[in-house]
Amino acid sequence: MHKTDLPQYAIDGALRRRGCAHIYDQLDSARTALVVIDMQNMFLEVGAPAEVPIAREIVPNINRLAASLRDAGGTVVWVQMTQTNDNLSDWSVYYDGVSTEERAAKCLEWLTEGSHGHAIWPELEVQGGDLISLKDRYSAFLPGASDIEQQLRARDIDTVLITGTVTNVCCESSARDAMMRNFKVLMVSDGNATFRDEEHLATLASIYQVFGDVMTTDEVISRLSAARQPQAAE
Image (cartoon, rainbow, N blue to C red; front, side, top):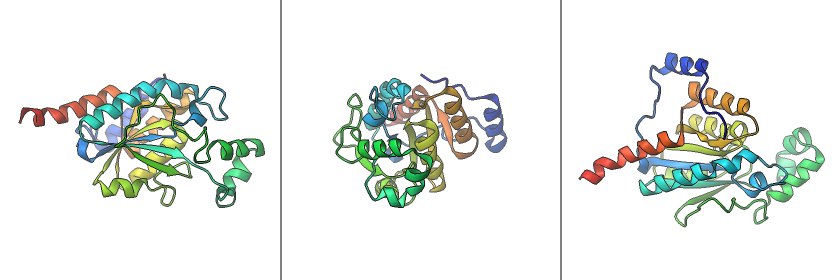
């Protein structure tokens, strides 16, 4: 598992900007969605073209978060990176520029809808009432990249808990764009994974200072539990 302690400069920067440690210290579970990004065979299977070994370690935390949020009346969304032949031209900067020809071909093969690589990792506990959203860019919240915003708005959701892989690419891109689309963003520090601690912590520091909040799985679950207690008392 990655280190999750935020660097002091990020804590200091956040306190200067907002004057408190957590801007989303209370969660309205009915208006909250757990967004699970790219936890697919392409990224979790041993030997897969884009294997992220640490991503397998965050599976239990994501399952715990999903179960807790469902119990509290919230929503779980599974986001799947999805590519088609159209992306060869409409995202040619990726296919012809930042990827080698071999890597690009594997991405297209493994991320085609219905393929083995495209499937959600089998150890993740997807339930029938969960939402699925297919995206064709790094960010799920980039307008036109997926239907996640429309699905969440239809359910009056205004807060997103970002989890998945990789921390500093698809997860960070989605977190930034979600905030820019006026969602409250909370990144789960031990619910995201990438290749190196340095990359992981740099993303957490950036999100925490400017784009939203950062908490551990236990911290999120404790807040969801606290939100349920008054209802139980009634």
